[in-house]
Image 1: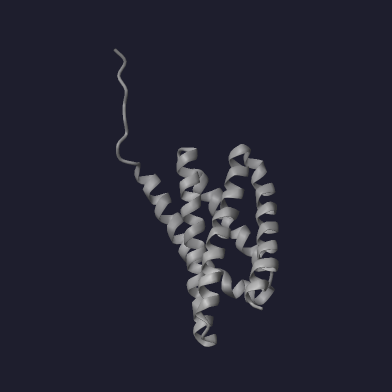
Image 2: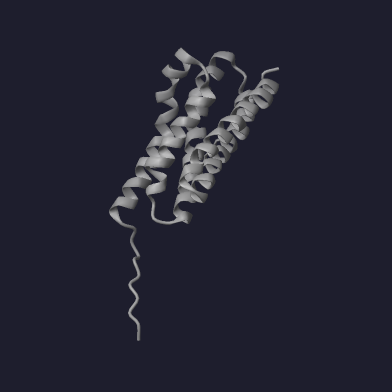
Length: 152
């Protein structure tokens, strides 16, 4: 009879990567604010920052399933955090409808752009750069079409 080892608890390093991925999703939007205010091009800087998290944290997880789940959670937390910072502008404007519309649209957009990069990188690591380009294009189209429409 063959002996099979089953690991019930995830390893310490996997837990650490999970925590770092969650923290990155929550703080990256805040860290990018000064850079975006100075240089503009929020789509490019946000997607590059997300690609770095994918490369250095998410791809360190042991299975494709764990990487995909972590990517979805990271995209969700990134979008949530970005919208919390946007909420301060809503208080100044007093229009909460725009906040909810933006929230319901931008969070899925961030999840999708992260997953585009992850799936490209899972196919072949060097395709992550192609996924990054695709994510930037999606983000630019989103900002150009959806956000401009909401602000009218």
